[in-house]
Length: 293
Image (tube, rainbow, N blue to C red):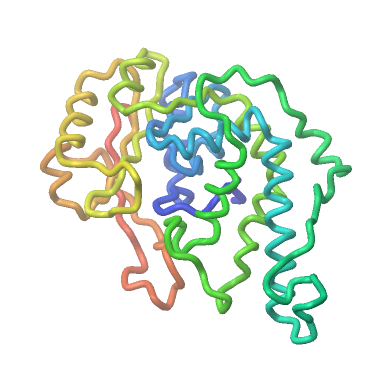
């Protein structure tokens, strides 16, 4: 299955998407709420006619607001970034470049301009009027995409080396599918709220909440979870009117103490890092749901 992918991000749930879809379809709900949306890997591929994407981290809500309301601007910024990095790579590897020619001997690059603005994709990505209450800053959105797509493990902190695959490879793949991504995102309701607030706002019998909270003990995110957050979430699940699916690390016994026995456990191939360097080839995920299986 080929999924839409926007950027590298720790904990992306591509291997879990078929199980999420199955539970969502069985719920017969008409609204899918991605409470901890992150990179959007689930929302982009769940194929729900009504989707609420939420993340408490404003860099991600800005990213998706920019894709929704300023797609042409962001697309051109990303194309310029890719072209500039390609030129820099040629400068670094070409021994015949002269620093006095002005063509990049000291790392300068020529201005690329808006490459490819006459393409069919660029014409499709017109900019609708903005009516979002959130941040819409395409420049910040570009920086977010570049930072995560070029960093180790999608953590947005440590950058790759030249011995790795091209740092542009992921961005180029994103550009190739940018039109399809925009077609999905433009239909979303995008929120930047705490999970407690988003549940209160959208809870109803026709709502389906997907919960993929930050992993305990993993400082991967700007907004990490504490035990009190997990306790609050467990309390909300006891009282929620709608349907839900929560996935957790099945090997974390502290979470079993909070949420109890899971509804089901699944094993998935570990896709983090090169296969030869993975200590555990399979990972177990526990699922909690009030949808009949």
